[in-house]
Length: 215
Image 1 (cartoon, rainbow, N blue to C red):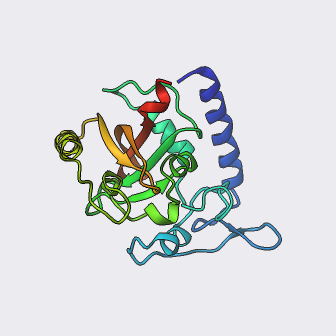
Image 2: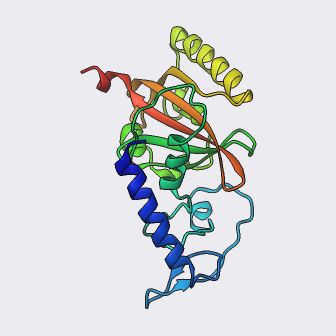
């Protein structure tokens, strides 16, 4: 990580520490006067907007529905990716302009729990449409099955590689033929980084359209 990122992270942590002195924990939400407080719980069901609206926000700088409606501190998560002790894949600098998803590695089928706006722009799907799903839904046109045998075989081989690496806690980079919401196919260079954050295992999935990279 470069020195600018380190300095930004240090200052943000100082602000959080100061702001958190008056916090009582629970969900950080603001009333009409901008005061932070309140609490929330979640019934365990990944149900799109209901799920997103009910997520706890434990950061005094995160105001639900404004800064991080998902309840996930993506800055902190990306810092975890930067600072992972034994990187197996070089990913370079990433920021808010990167298409990415965050998946719950401890839940059945590894559902998406967060997606970035660039991911929405890349695929055409909104966060409400993808949260709770496994990323494999992108391997088929909307509402249909991919009839191309070569694509299906290549995607199956990529899935086996991902499954093999992730089951062993390894990072992975593969190519998938994915489909946007309008049915347009694109080659997705998918990089998967397992991380441990806030007492749980997650997988950060970075997406890149190969056609855009080499224009």
